[in-house]
Image (cartoon, rainbow, N blue to C red; front, side, top):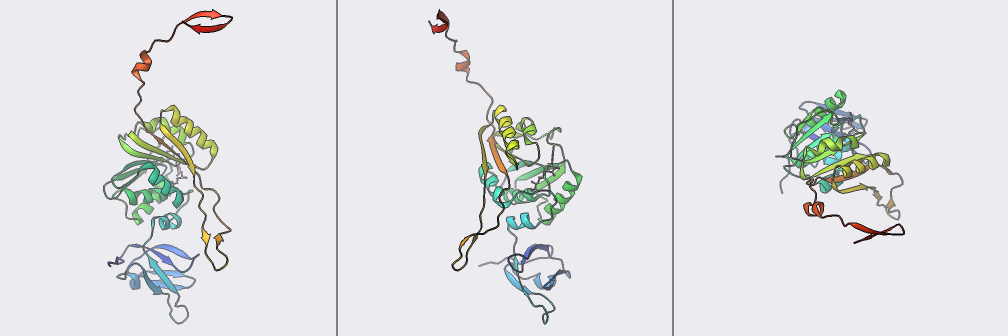
Length: 288
Ligand SMILES: C[S@@+](CC[C@H](N)C(=O)[O-])C[C@H]1O[C@@H](n2cnc3c(N)ncnc32)[C@H](O)[C@@H]1O
């Protein structure tokens, strides 16, 4: 069985217990300080993911820390962020319901902290690409840092761009992902970026946004327009106390999907002559 060795600059998921867990980049000669002692990165570099290290000083601290390879969900929940991010369960639905996979080309707006961008980046690698836009320079800066930390710069381009007003000059993209306040205003424009059969997916926290987005998708002739909400419950498994946990995140947002289809009308139906109305009896039109 092969194990992956931890190298300088790798991101690790450092776990002390259920509550205390960090996404950390290891640097030669560096340290990570916790209230349960200090972790020296030199002790981690060269070990395998899945190893255990003890905090220093050993005599007074010596707590056990687990070193794991971060999962996409760890990136999302523990990365640097300022904007509202998309939660892991919602990204799972986005992936399978939009068909994102290796080689997919995606346009995204806005990038926010880049949480969703990093997840999608992991899945489109190595030959796909994500073109992610935002109108907030601070978000762009933070998202670029997160993408760099996740070592996804080869498959992600983050840049300034207004999805509502700019012509972003994309053609034949597989998926457009919208996570912004007014997605319905973007539908007409992004339709030109999508290839036929391509998917648009929009994440919105409120029903009011969903109604406008669905209406915009339908008026632009998208088909398979469907909206979903996912509710995730974590189960506490304990002797004689196995049940859903008491605290949970009650609402993340709604996901609306639509597929682009060729815009043509049935030529036979268009040509079919309308039946003539010839007799009018007591106000009731009858066909001749
Ligand atoms: C909720 S955040 C996105 C969070 C992101 N999905 C994540 O996982 O980190 C919404 C972002 O949309 C951006 N935005 C709003 N209007 C936009 C527009 N017209 N074009 C591009 N980005 C826009 C905002 O600046 C903000 O950063």
